Image (cartoon, rainbow, N blue to C red; front, side):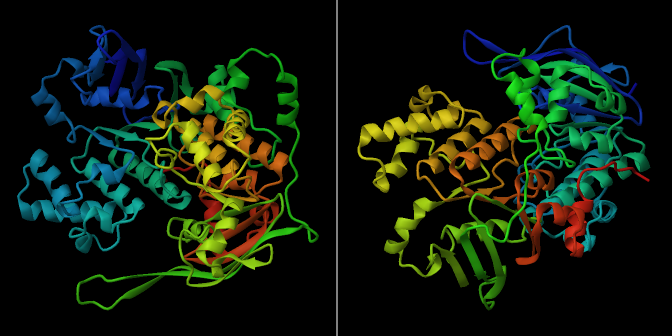
Length: 566
């Protein structure tokens, strides 16, 4: 056995009188040349387990139970000295972290950082390290590896940065590779490339791998064995085929059911509580809603609430002090119609212009050309004072719930501020009552009004952001990757919430996402963007069943499916 974790228990000191038990006596094995997936939601203890293996837990407040053992080739890593662990890291056990931009030093070139690993562990001189670094970049599929050695991390795309991290991890030919959420923030096409690359490298170099993720959909593509964690405990483990075909634990069943299915559209997605809580009030109606399907699509007689005509946006920049300005066309003559009470899904890779398009609709970017018609008015041509009266009618929910809310405001202040600015509701009492009601709509207690954003989880913060938009009673809500960073169970809750709100208020959504399964579930019509252009638009069922454009077919072919290393 390459790695054996035995009764691992880890706690963190919260204050002088209390500790948080993050990992509670878990045990699992990683065999030679095998891949084990560690699956669970945020806070389940996955990353703490990985950091324990490498001895990277903070010494100030982390404590590993003395009865715990982590055996790597029969040596207990928890008893290893700091010197032994430093020699082990990178050379025999390597780790690919979730966010490459925080893992790569922005002050040093890619070549220097790769060379440092090779010089430190293999004793290569500069020339040897440089040649080996170029070979590693070529092995992980980076074009023009020699020239990329001189590039800084910020000059690379997210997928290229992750490839550099993988190159650093395999540089010394480790026996065990730990991959901690290596594809979470990547587009579906880049995600598939990275997964295939990892699978190929593992087979070619005969490595063992511990793959950490919150998405069970990815597990089926790369792992042989799966370990499901929740609240620091292992709920279920076994072969991937067995766990996927016949899950025994209710939590595993919940994780598998929370993802939007590709073959149907249930009126309501199941959530974790449906499986973990004993049936009670409303359980029967929830079950019926999970079986019923929601119809999707547009009709010719649909009322059009928003129309974009040939809108464009260019950015200008200089690559050097004396260079001429260069033009980057972020959106190129995009046109679409949004019907009342319908959802337009916008898909494409990073850099396709999706987010820029959303920001143009709410005038957070100034368009270079085109029209956005709302109630017969071109919103882009209005003076700022005239546009103010339309701002409440078109709202946006941003991707990052941690950066969307003012950390110095209470939730009450966050919800009351827009109503005060736009003089909505008759008085302050009515505004406070509206804020309480909206919190209830998004599934939060009225006591949240007195709390600050840092007291809430990511999913709860996104609910607050949605409630803030609802204070304006908008006709159009733009959701810019608003569920992509969330665990699948929280994602299901928010998708159900958005469906309920659309049913109640007949709001129209512009739903921007790179998650094609979520878009198919939510959208009546799908618009595909590439390099700022709209390459295809059609009803959701039509575009998924019969894509016309080669780029659309590429995106759909990259949706999760079994990936082999062959």
